[in-house]
Image 1 (tube, rainbow, N blue to C red):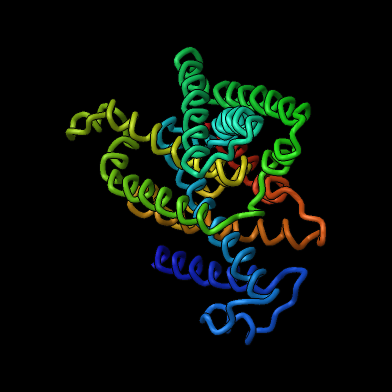
Image 2: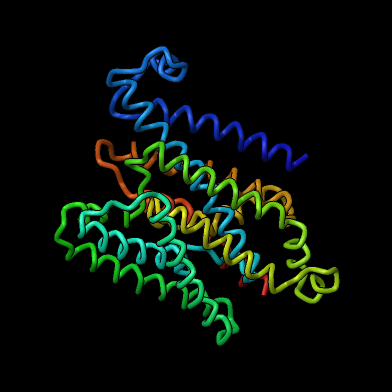
Length: 332
């Protein structure tokens, strides 16, 4: 019953947030105007351009990428057996950001504009490099707290190098990467949304199909092997899937903080279960809700100035992470 209530409440919250993000903005629109645009009765004018080409792509991007972040965080927490693991904290998002920035600077400096799959490939390579460093550290460090600290340091180094590259770039298009490097859903286009949609949904579907072996893995590697799970292949799959999801987010919206850490914990707290079969769709839905809420606040809190979405997610979700760390210490 608790699970049904959660999914119904999350679906209702998602619908309300979508409506709020459709209506809110500097350009006010009536319900009738919005309906005419959505049903195709109006195909031109300022209202059509703002709703169809600005707000709706942004809403769709927040939905898919927010869900991707939460599922990526769940995969990392399962892999490391640590509820504080996440793509932002472990420096994976920052590694993706660095390689994307380097790639864009290289190509934009030569007048070449990268397409969606190019950005995606660069972010995936960056995610894997950062994940490789984290895995090397995990072989030498036994304490989870030290692993998190090392991940944060890796993230800081990658972010510092990225900021230096963006700051001293000459090309005006490259300088505009500063907004992207802070995390933002602005400027989304339908071509980007289409690419990220099938990429995120396909990756999440594969993750969902691995629910049963991941459930066995949560009970320990020895138990997983005894029930016939190929632990080595499963760990590689979790790394690749998590890196792919975090890379997709970073490529299109930049690094977004704390969603990947806090949302899986909040969903687990609400549903009262650790079963991947339930948590994976729950995390996706929860991540979409939280990201849409934070993106709406980022747009409207100080309008017409838009703040970084990472600033908003940090304000709301960092306390959740602090409580998680305190509770984990109390349990020990």
